[in-house]
Length: 268
Image 1 (cartoon, rainbow, N blue to C red):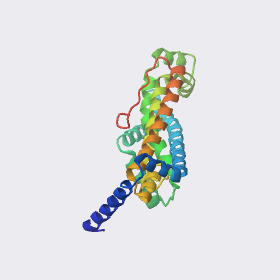
Image 2: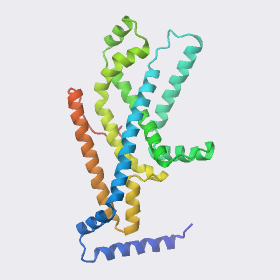
Image 3: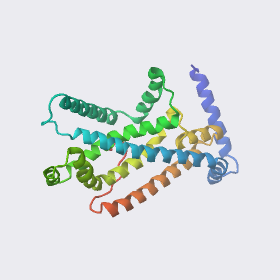
Image 4: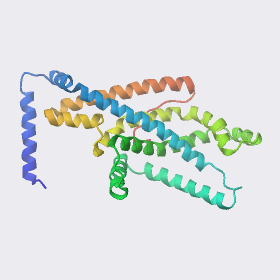
Protein backbone atom coordinates (compact mmCIF):
# COMPACT_ATOMS: atom_id res chain seq x y z
CA UNK A 1 0.00 0.00 0.00
CA UNK A 2 3.06 2.30 0.00
CA UNK A 3 2.80 4.77 -2.93
CA UNK A 4 5.30 4.38 -5.76
CA UNK A 5 6.84 7.81 -5.03
CA UNK A 6 7.57 6.89 -1.39
CA UNK A 7 9.04 3.54 -2.42
CA UNK A 8 11.34 5.30 -4.87
CA UNK A 9 12.43 7.74 -2.16
CA UNK A 10 13.21 4.87 0.19
CA UNK A 11 15.28 3.19 -2.54
CA UNK A 12 17.15 6.43 -3.27
CA UNK A 13 17.91 6.84 0.44
CA UNK A 14 19.29 3.30 0.62
CA UNK A 15 21.50 3.89 -2.45
CA UNK A 16 22.75 7.13 -0.91
CA UNK A 17 23.71 5.34 2.30
CA UNK A 18 25.43 2.62 0.29
CA UNK A 19 27.43 5.14 -1.76
CA UNK A 20 28.28 7.14 1.36
CA UNK A 21 29.78 4.04 2.94
CA UNK A 22 31.77 3.26 -0.23
CA UNK A 23 33.04 6.81 -0.67
CA UNK A 24 34.99 6.72 2.59
CA UNK A 25 38.41 5.32 3.25
CA UNK A 26 37.16 1.76 3.78
CA UNK A 27 37.95 -0.51 0.84
CA UNK A 28 35.65 -3.23 -0.45
CA UNK A 29 37.60 -6.06 1.17
CA UNK A 30 37.82 -4.14 4.42
CA UNK A 31 34.04 -3.73 4.32
CA UNK A 32 33.63 -7.47 3.74
CA UNK A 33 35.96 -8.20 6.64
CA UNK A 34 34.09 -5.77 8.90
CA UNK A 35 30.78 -7.45 8.13
CA UNK A 36 32.28 -10.90 8.74
CA UNK A 37 33.85 -9.83 12.02
CA UNK A 38 30.53 -8.45 13.24
CA UNK A 39 28.09 -11.03 11.89
CA UNK A 40 30.17 -14.19 11.46
CA UNK A 41 28.19 -15.99 14.17
CA UNK A 42 24.97 -15.34 12.23
CA UNK A 43 26.51 -16.56 8.97
CA UNK A 44 27.81 -19.71 10.64
CA UNK A 45 24.46 -20.37 12.31
CA UNK A 46 22.70 -19.96 8.96
CA UNK A 47 25.23 -22.29 7.35
CA UNK A 48 24.53 -24.91 10.01
CA UNK A 49 20.78 -24.68 9.41
CA UNK A 50 21.29 -24.93 5.65
CA UNK A 51 23.42 -28.06 6.02
CA UNK A 52 20.98 -29.63 8.48
CA UNK A 53 18.01 -29.12 6.15
CA UNK A 54 19.99 -30.31 3.12
CA UNK A 55 21.29 -33.52 4.68
CA UNK A 56 18.06 -34.45 6.44
CA UNK A 57 15.96 -33.58 3.40
CA UNK A 58 18.16 -35.68 1.11
CA UNK A 59 18.23 -38.64 3.52
CA UNK A 60 14.48 -38.71 4.15
CA UNK A 61 13.81 -37.96 0.49
CA UNK A 62 15.86 -41.01 -0.45
CA UNK A 63 13.73 -43.12 1.88
CA UNK A 64 10.53 -41.70 0.38
CA UNK A 65 11.83 -42.35 -3.12
CA UNK A 66 12.62 -45.98 -2.29
CA UNK A 67 9.15 -46.59 -0.84
CA UNK A 68 7.37 -44.92 -3.76
CA UNK A 69 9.37 -46.75 -6.39
CA UNK A 70 9.13 -50.16 -4.72
CA UNK A 71 5.34 -49.77 -4.66
CA UNK A 72 5.29 -48.65 -8.28
CA UNK A 73 7.20 -51.77 -9.35
CA UNK A 74 4.86 -54.29 -7.67
CA UNK A 75 3.45 -56.54 -10.43
CA UNK A 76 -0.36 -56.60 -10.45
CA UNK A 77 -1.11 -59.15 -13.19
CA UNK A 78 -1.40 -62.04 -10.75
CA UNK A 79 -3.18 -60.01 -8.08
CA UNK A 80 -6.91 -60.39 -7.57
CA UNK A 81 -9.71 -58.56 -5.84
CA UNK A 82 -9.12 -55.94 -3.18
CA UNK A 83 -5.34 -56.41 -3.15
CA UNK A 84 -5.08 -55.55 -6.83
CA UNK A 85 -7.29 -52.48 -6.48
CA UNK A 86 -5.34 -51.26 -3.42
CA UNK A 87 -1.96 -51.73 -5.11
CA UNK A 88 -3.13 -49.98 -8.26
CA UNK A 89 -4.48 -47.09 -6.18
CA UNK A 90 -1.17 -46.74 -4.33
CA UNK A 91 0.71 -46.83 -7.62
CA UNK A 92 -1.50 -44.12 -9.09
CA UNK A 93 -1.01 -41.97 -5.99
CA UNK A 94 2.76 -42.51 -6.20
CA UNK A 95 2.82 -41.49 -9.86
CA UNK A 96 0.68 -38.42 -9.15
CA UNK A 97 2.96 -37.43 -6.27
CA UNK A 98 6.07 -37.68 -8.45
CA UNK A 99 4.53 -35.73 -11.32
CA UNK A 100 3.11 -32.95 -9.14
CA UNK A 101 6.26 -32.31 -7.11
CA UNK A 102 8.58 -32.58 -10.11
CA UNK A 103 6.43 -30.11 -12.06
CA UNK A 104 6.17 -27.32 -9.48
CA UNK A 105 8.88 -25.11 -7.89
CA UNK A 106 9.97 -25.80 -4.33
CA UNK A 107 9.19 -22.20 -3.35
CA UNK A 108 5.54 -22.72 -4.33
CA UNK A 109 5.44 -26.05 -2.50
CA UNK A 110 6.83 -24.36 0.61
CA UNK A 111 4.12 -21.70 0.58
CA UNK A 112 1.32 -24.21 0.00
CA UNK A 113 2.47 -26.72 2.63
CA UNK A 114 3.46 -24.25 5.35
CA UNK A 115 0.61 -21.78 5.08
CA UNK A 116 -1.95 -24.26 3.77
CA UNK A 117 -1.49 -26.50 6.80
CA UNK A 118 -2.25 -23.51 9.02
CA UNK A 119 -5.24 -22.32 7.08
CA UNK A 120 -7.02 -25.60 6.36
CA UNK A 121 -5.77 -28.05 9.00
CA UNK A 122 -4.89 -25.66 11.85
CA UNK A 123 -1.41 -27.18 12.07
CA UNK A 124 1.16 -24.58 13.12
CA UNK A 125 4.44 -26.18 12.08
CA UNK A 126 7.82 -25.02 13.31
CA UNK A 127 9.60 -23.40 10.32
CA UNK A 128 12.64 -25.67 10.63
CA UNK A 129 10.48 -28.80 10.76
CA UNK A 130 8.44 -27.53 7.81
CA UNK A 131 11.65 -26.86 5.86
CA UNK A 132 12.92 -30.43 6.41
CA UNK A 133 9.50 -31.82 5.46
CA UNK A 134 9.27 -29.73 2.29
CA UNK A 135 12.79 -30.60 1.11
CA UNK A 136 12.21 -34.29 1.91
CA UNK A 137 8.98 -34.45 -0.08
CA UNK A 138 10.47 -32.53 -3.01
CA UNK A 139 13.63 -34.65 -3.02
CA UNK A 140 11.62 -37.87 -2.74
CA UNK A 141 9.82 -37.07 -6.00
CA UNK A 142 13.07 -36.52 -7.90
CA UNK A 143 14.86 -39.49 -6.38
CA UNK A 144 11.91 -41.81 -7.07
CA UNK A 145 12.57 -41.31 -10.78
CA UNK A 146 16.30 -41.66 -10.22
CA UNK A 147 15.73 -44.95 -8.40
CA UNK A 148 13.49 -46.11 -11.24
CA UNK A 149 16.36 -45.60 -13.64
CA UNK A 150 18.70 -47.47 -11.29
CA UNK A 151 16.29 -50.41 -11.07
CA UNK A 152 15.94 -50.49 -14.86
CA UNK A 153 19.73 -50.68 -15.15
CA UNK A 154 19.85 -53.97 -13.21
CA UNK A 155 20.09 -57.00 -15.49
CA UNK A 156 16.78 -58.80 -15.97
CA UNK A 157 18.49 -62.05 -15.02
CA UNK A 158 18.77 -60.77 -11.46
CA UNK A 159 14.97 -60.49 -11.25
CA UNK A 160 14.50 -63.95 -12.69
CA UNK A 161 17.05 -65.50 -10.34
CA UNK A 162 15.43 -63.86 -7.31
CA UNK A 163 12.00 -65.17 -8.30
CA UNK A 164 13.45 -68.60 -9.01
CA UNK A 165 14.62 -69.00 -5.41
CA UNK A 166 11.22 -67.98 -4.09
CA UNK A 167 11.81 -64.38 -3.00
CA UNK A 168 8.78 -62.13 -2.75
CA UNK A 169 8.74 -58.72 -4.41
CA UNK A 170 9.79 -56.86 -1.25
CA UNK A 171 12.55 -59.33 -0.44
CA UNK A 172 13.82 -59.25 -4.01
CA UNK A 173 13.96 -55.44 -4.06
CA UNK A 174 15.61 -55.08 -0.65
CA UNK A 175 18.16 -57.90 -0.87
CA UNK A 176 18.93 -58.16 -4.59
CA UNK A 177 17.84 -55.26 -6.79
CA UNK A 178 18.20 -52.08 -4.71
CA UNK A 179 21.78 -52.78 -3.53
CA UNK A 180 22.81 -53.05 -7.18
CA UNK A 181 20.74 -50.05 -8.22
CA UNK A 182 22.41 -47.94 -5.50
CA UNK A 183 25.76 -48.18 -7.28
CA UNK A 184 24.24 -46.67 -10.39
CA UNK A 185 22.31 -43.89 -8.66
CA UNK A 186 24.91 -42.83 -6.08
CA UNK A 187 26.18 -39.91 -8.20
CA UNK A 188 22.60 -38.73 -8.73
CA UNK A 189 21.96 -38.79 -4.99
CA UNK A 190 25.03 -36.63 -4.60
CA UNK A 191 23.70 -34.27 -7.26
CA UNK A 192 20.47 -33.93 -5.32
CA UNK A 193 22.36 -33.08 -2.12
CA UNK A 194 24.28 -30.32 -3.90
CA UNK A 195 21.06 -28.96 -5.42
CA UNK A 196 19.40 -29.00 -1.99
CA UNK A 197 22.26 -27.02 -0.42
CA UNK A 198 21.56 -24.24 -2.90
CA UNK A 199 17.79 -24.56 -3.08
CA UNK A 200 17.29 -24.17 0.68
CA UNK A 201 17.63 -20.45 -0.04
CA UNK A 202 13.99 -20.38 -1.22
CA UNK A 203 12.84 -21.42 2.26
CA UNK A 204 13.35 -17.87 3.50
CA UNK A 205 9.77 -17.28 2.32
CA UNK A 206 8.54 -19.28 5.34
CA UNK A 207 10.96 -17.49 7.70
CA UNK A 208 13.49 -20.29 8.05
CA UNK A 209 16.71 -18.76 9.38
CA UNK A 210 18.93 -20.49 6.85
CA UNK A 211 21.93 -18.89 5.19
CA UNK A 212 20.09 -16.72 2.67
CA UNK A 213 17.61 -15.44 5.29
CA UNK A 214 20.49 -14.44 7.58
CA UNK A 215 22.21 -12.65 4.71
CA UNK A 216 19.06 -10.66 3.92
CA UNK A 217 18.96 -9.55 7.55
CA UNK A 218 22.62 -8.52 7.56
CA UNK A 219 22.29 -6.66 4.25
CA UNK A 220 19.21 -4.83 5.50
CA UNK A 221 20.93 -3.83 8.73
CA UNK A 222 24.18 -2.59 7.20
CA UNK A 223 23.04 -1.39 3.75
CA UNK A 224 26.17 -3.15 2.49
CA UNK A 225 24.21 -5.22 0.00
CA UNK A 226 26.98 -6.37 -2.33
CA UNK A 227 29.42 -7.12 0.47
CA UNK A 228 26.92 -9.24 2.38
CA UNK A 229 25.93 -11.28 -0.67
CA UNK A 230 29.56 -11.62 -1.69
CA UNK A 231 30.17 -13.37 1.63
CA UNK A 232 27.18 -15.70 1.20
CA UNK A 233 28.25 -16.51 -2.37
CA UNK A 234 31.65 -17.61 -1.06
CA UNK A 235 30.01 -19.74 1.62
CA UNK A 236 27.72 -21.47 -0.88
CA UNK A 237 30.69 -22.03 -3.19
CA UNK A 238 32.74 -23.63 -0.42
CA UNK A 239 29.83 -25.82 0.71
CA UNK A 240 29.08 -27.12 -2.77
CA UNK A 241 32.74 -27.74 -3.61
CA UNK A 242 33.25 -29.68 -0.38
CA UNK A 243 30.10 -31.68 -1.07
CA UNK A 244 31.32 -32.37 -4.61
CA UNK A 245 34.69 -33.56 -3.31
CA UNK A 246 33.14 -35.95 -0.78
CA UNK A 247 30.59 -37.28 -3.27
CA UNK A 248 33.24 -37.86 -5.94
CA UNK A 249 35.38 -39.75 -3.45
CA UNK A 250 32.46 -41.96 -2.42
CA UNK A 251 31.43 -42.50 -6.03
CA UNK A 252 34.94 -43.54 -7.07
CA UNK A 253 35.02 -46.06 -4.22
CA UNK A 254 31.60 -47.65 -4.70
CA UNK A 255 30.76 -46.81 -8.32
CA UNK A 256 34.06 -46.46 -10.22
CA UNK A 257 32.38 -47.20 -13.58
CA UNK A 258 29.64 -44.55 -13.19
CA UNK A 259 30.39 -40.96 -14.23
CA UNK A 260 29.65 -38.09 -11.85
CA UNK A 261 28.20 -34.83 -13.15
CA UNK A 262 26.58 -31.99 -11.26
CA UNK A 263 23.14 -30.90 -12.47
CA UNK A 264 21.25 -27.73 -11.76
CA UNK A 265 17.81 -27.70 -10.19
CA UNK A 266 16.18 -27.21 -13.60
CA UNK A 267 18.00 -30.22 -15.06
CA UNK A 268 17.40 -32.57 -12.13
